[in-house]
Length: 194
Length: 194
DNA sequence: CAGCAGCGATAACATATGTTATGTAATCAA
DNA sequence: TTGATTACATAACATATGTTATCGCTGCTG
Image (cartoon, rainbow over all chains, first blue to last red; front, side, top):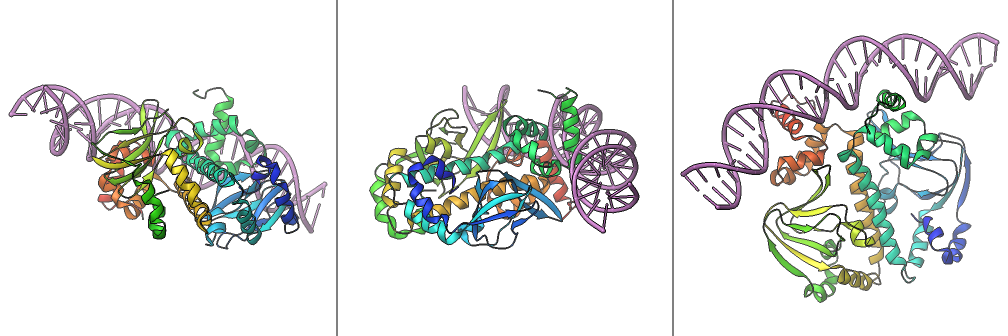
């Protein structure tokens, strides 16, 4: 959320710069845990290079919720904002370079920005967009079959399929790796409907 | 969103009262459309009595997304905030009494409130909660079987099952009415697992 | 280099879920 | 009240999806 503002509000750059010094740059290998399920989120994470996944453990199985790439920021939002244990683990998928900005500074920054004209309106708009994002994920399960969800992923967000291992994608789609493999075969053989 | 503040911030009552006169009270029968899919949302809706559903049409079939009851406020959020056509229809399920507050006044009210100390923080917290709500709906599809989703609905939000027709609930759970009926039979016969 | 672990494909079988059809009771409008 | 419509249950069958197991490939590590 936070860092996406940077692109939308270049005139805010002086504000960002003030907080640059508080960001901790980390170069980490794949499968590095950045936040562990059960712990309270203390940092906002910005990805300079690489990609990460947000997931939770369900009866011993990883369930992937979302994937993030270069120039995206993330956190375990509920934990970060409301100071409760995180329901999710955040872990790198590839070797990555990330910046961690402690909550304290994020909050300070928000306090500063909130007084800027029209910023609060933008904040509301962006949070409406986020809401819409998760709502759409949810709607997709009501509306579409797993095959259609995969097709949409392929056409709308192909970078995910290119960079994220298939077993992660399967749980994100709500299916098994076996079934995902079958779907791919079906599509490749041209027998997919629509 | 908006009207829920009233309970959390009783000291803000003077602000609400200013806008009372702009709210349009409506007594409407069941199946009254309050907002039509494709039109832009112009009002924030507050339910004094009754209940409503938010749904969309998918190949001729209604897909229900969410149900709202007394003392809850709603709108087609993306449409309302970002001035785009609504992806959803809002329709009463029971005969209801609702208040409609035009967007213009909602925005004015937000502008006033945003300058109150700590309000913006609360706004962020509440929007995080909303995000979490939809995220949880989405997670439920990744994590649970339809049977488990029904069980959770039954234990956590029984009022929905009591007041909302079963065919609406089925699409909300992402299944057919036939399957929902089977699930109920299975549970009633005590053969449900867990 | 050998061996191992993880990923992905595939097959056989089991279970869950959808489809279509039918019956019955409840609801609603004329 | 009647007749039409809607909600819900149920059955028979079709399809989708899960489970378990096996195999081959790749990349890693000793």
